[in-house]
Every structure is written in structure tokens, then in C-alpha cells.
Image (tube, rainbow, N blue to C red; front, side, top):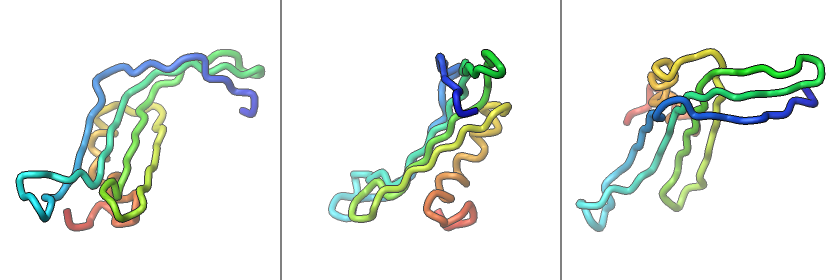
Length: 108
């Protein structure tokens, strides 16, 4: 709705995290983070003139790739309504590779 206003957002549980990295060439003891993602279950209150106030439940997912230079960083976000953290957590690995078009079947 064009007049929708989010009144509040609450994170309901500890988010799930996923980090992908590689060893730094100069120092094998150092890991360079190249991809990161999280899935956070939420509740939010939204108000519209036509429908009044509604409470929506779901999971917010964020994934970013190319976190180590020289490549250009890319981010993507998902708001999945009516799903549980378990469902979204199972999709983190696929989504972290879908951001740059490598797809879930890419070599990790």
C-alpha cells in the first residue's frame, strides 16, 4: 500500500549467520572474509489507512559478496513473510552464492 507506515520492528530470536572466506596469500594464518549472510526472524507492525494496523511475521535475510577487494561488493535482501528461522537458515548457503549469480551449486 502506498501509505503503509512501519510503526515498529522486533527481532524475535538470535539470527543465523554464515561467513565464507579464504586464506590470505601472504599469511596462511589469516582468513579473509569474502561472503557473509544472516537470517533474522522478525515481527513488525505496519499501518495503512485502508486496513489499519497489521502485525507481520517472517525472516529478514541479508547476503553480501565480494567483501575483499578488488571486486565490487554486492548486497541482496529478502523479506520472507510467514516463514520460520529454520526455513530461512536452510537457504542461507544457496542465497549467499545467488547474490552474484554463482548459484547454489557453485563450488565452495
